[in-house]
Length: 251
Image (tube, rainbow, N blue to C red):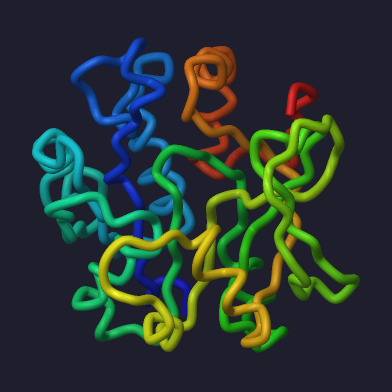
């Protein structure tokens, strides 16, 4: 059951590109309207019955812990896996392994992006395909900033393409994943990246992708952070599970 899953949130990023507009604040606590961005992700998980969270913190970790504490105020339970030095997206998950002993499958999410997704549907897809890893992907008009995910008609990932200067549409990684816990055996301790190191190496193990059609945004740059401000009402609605398949023309 989805209520038994744990969700790992990657919230330890340095956020160097965003410091000019949110100095002294973890990127994930940057305000969207009057709401810290990370509140949206916690609300999104809670509204769909996911109440067991692990936050992989690092940069200014104390500010995140001061805001959320044990999660009781948000109707969730939160454990913290703190990085003493930056470990990258894969390294952070490996570092949190001790908090995942009681689950066979878990969700992981980038802390600086929001993707409207039905977690039950994503989990059903993960089980139907017997995937080792499932990525939630989204189609954007300009993939230049992200790189692309190449998927066959069954949803199996065939490869990943690096960022290019060309403007073209395609599927990109939406920053939401489902992992079989056995995948942790393939992640080395220390610094490593899901996108660059782990996913390409696991293609033969069964990496699948399910396309999502709702709102998607990350706040990694000042330009996208400003765009998120314009979408704050829609993001708050989507976080509560009340928005379905909103098309964002500026993707």
